[in-house]
Length: 396
Image 1 (tube, rainbow, N blue to C red):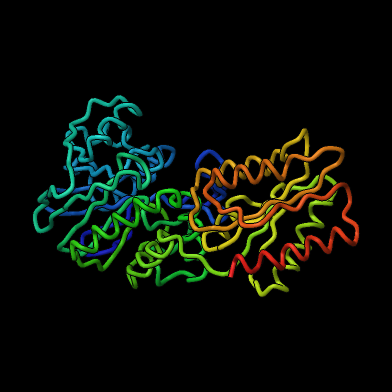
Image 2: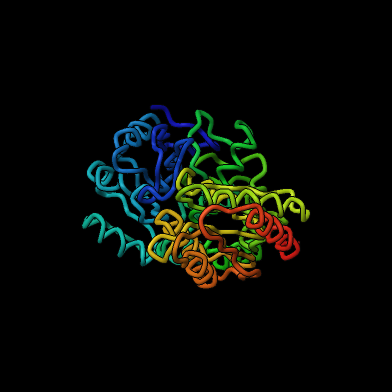
């Protein structure tokens, strides 16, 4: 379990989790696995920045040992409480009990509530610095990116930013750097990460990035706590975050539906045909009962329009689309237009319910919903086509 040098006397000592397939309580699919990144700085004061998931403690410890004995660690920087980054702390502190931990006030509170460890902890805030010897660490509080305790750690001598959960990806590879991996896969995982975890925090992220840019701190490398390290073009991911945080959209529509006996599916397909005829060439369709919700949310990050459909059951939406709508509501997308559609039997209700949730979500319901009874006939299919064609104007 050898460490990987990322700069002179600075090492990646994290873990690659090849097999993880869900994250955040199974709400996020991680088809490419993930990593838990930790960084070891060898200086007059030996410092570890973040740890790993608790079940991988032994691997972290072995990697550190490949560089230096555990008892040599003087400082541990805790950028974030969440257990995929702090879980190895109890095992680690048994081996280096004299190490001092640094983090925000909320971090101290959170670590106590997680582990109840009687550890030497020093609270830091934005602007505080820690002298290691040849190097210095400075701290930038980043509350709600994405927990209240979160912070970034910056080493000015190395122009190295270690921002924990910002700028990361769930991406397991044998390589550690951005210039060593497939760029399409890398950015696909980066936007997926942002869309499914950080999207509701866009206003906070935009402000924090603006604050950091105003500091005029040079950045030659960004070492996040998940995925690869940005060394070739670190501003690539920063600029992408700026775009995503602004809720920048394009003329794209995502149709998400759930169907009982395929009637609502027929409506979805006709709406898509109408959108295309109206000039919207980028249209994606998902049956939510058969689709990866994580992938659907990722497609929505730059889509101007979301069209949501469901058959009616008990005067309401079907359960999978209802669950999706609740998840979407939590992500708080802004600047989107939407419409509802669906089939029903003897009584409707789903379309009205969908419109209500879209409005609660902040989506502008920009066209009347389309509701058809039982199986769409030729007139019903044409009505869906025309509705899609007309809605295209709302998107453009």
